[in-house]
Image (tube, rainbow, N blue to C red; front, top):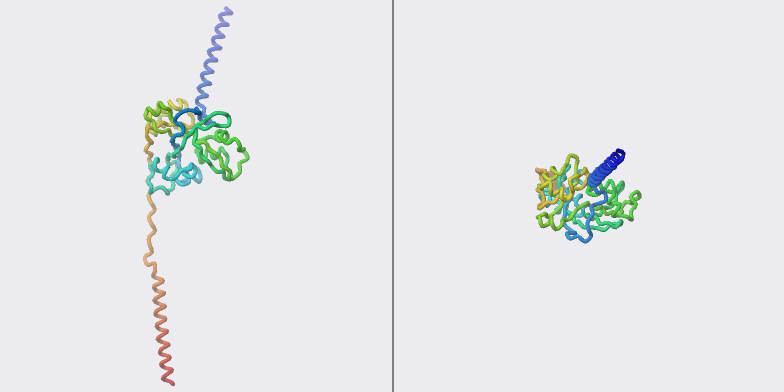
Length: 287
């Protein structure tokens, strides 16, 4: 009886251990990769053209295409073209949460700990009050993480950053494998999950199937985690209608005052000349 009870206890122990292991693996997969996304050093497909989905006018000082272009090291037109923004609106201020597609050059890069991670190398110059965390979550909108910034900048001390120092911010991205390329996929778009997002809503936004997103990222996702969305063509982003400011009305009589002044001066001069001639005539008569 005791032996049977012992075997039951052992079986129950192993069953619980197995369930805990499954739960651990599931939770580990669900956690965002804070230091970056691994890539084999010898895999074909790197470097590649990729895109980042960016929300305009959310971060302070990044409210137009020029400032965002400077942030990512690209021109305004390179953002406007894939973002469905007309050239007439290149200089227009962006509205809050305006959708943009920013081009990235994605590559597989070695790190100081011996691993390789996939990212676009973006150089940022530190300003007053900047930290790795603030820049990662502010201007770069969680398209990277401060842990990854620390990893790719091993010579910098995060708590002792000097104004003007250049820092590499690794923008998370991913290149396609051969199977995905043969299936007609052209690019991946790095998309940061927002509260309320799920695979279905993201798939609908980009016009793709949920399975294609899950195939690259897995089923479990968390807010602020970067999803890589495989697309055969870039989505047609809906942009706000921008009304060009009307030119200022020209003055009705721009030279009126000058003309009056010139007329007065001519008339006054003529009268003075006439008086002078009359005085001279009178003087000669008197003589």
